[in-house]
Image (cartoon, rainbow, N blue to C red; front, side):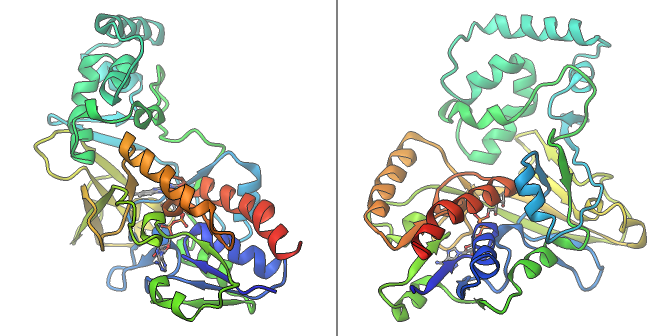
Length: 378
Ligand SMILES: Cc1cc2nc3c(=O)[nH]c(=O)nc-3n(C[C@H](O)[C@H](O)[C@H](O)COP(=O)(O)OP(=O)(O)OC[C@H]3O[C@@H](n4cnc5c(N)ncnc54)[C@H](O)[C@@H]3O)c2cc1C
């Protein structure tokens, strides 16, 4: 039997560790270089105020995948939170994603759905874009130029530090345009925040006699004492694993500026975007709104102002930068990885892919079934 080592205790690593421990009843070691489990989905409670903070930015669980939902409900009970996002633009507050309310407010009109649809179609036709080649063209071909300019141009420049004309059109396909007053951000069947925080979810997943958890442990050091026959599931960055030998994949990172305020409520919602280019942060998170069932008991509030920039070595990688160069470099690293028979790369860092938590869990469950089980139990 091979030793099984999982690098990274985020959702990808935690799901696989839990499956090996519970389903296969085999020992497994999971390491993380951070001092906590949970990866970027980690939340913790501020001891002064009792407010639960999402340490790496707001994390709302949402899915329509029945298998994922059934799986994760074994470790969490959920509250009734439903995500809404607002955006401040030129001194006014609008709802996001763009819906009939956003359109009517922006154009100072009271259009019905069909009228608004035709109005926006006319805006789109003015631009004559048939085959969008970049983010700007894609957004303009979905919304028309005025709405793009107001809500996406400055925000995208702040978020990516690149002209939207240089970015892939794929980035914007995630944003729906609605011709009704549906204010919900997500349209999945299931949505919520764990009642007892993500902290409890991860503890329940990883607390098992078969799981040996080692925090503050970087794979760079740990690998020196590994047996050569160990099976490694690696959820760290793929280029870092290969010591950047072909070059560095670009990532965006985020800096969060924490502020505590002696007020009950400072912005009235969990996330407020700031669309104007002149405002240096992209959004403000006010965490207590994620727990409507607790928030009246908490007198103060905590906010994070979010600033986006390119990641250097040592920074936390957040969003992959999908340029052609990075995609080609990723392919080259994947080619190197395919020659390693005892190592499986996965998760958002190992696959250089933005993955929501439910996608990460789905990929981990599939990796466990299709790749790990046949290797461990041939
Ligand atoms: C700003 C932001 C907001 C998000 N909001 C949402 C949301 O609202 N809803 C949603 O569904 N998803 C959201 N996501 C996505 C979510 O964060 C990911 O789905 C999830 O983190 C993926 O889990 P993972 O295990 O692949 O990676 P991670 O959670 O990043 O875990 C990887 C772990 O590997 C460890 N590691 C890396 N290298 C090494 C090494 N060399 N040695 C030891 N350990 C190592 C890291 O420390 C880390 O703990 C958001 C992402 C971002 C960036």
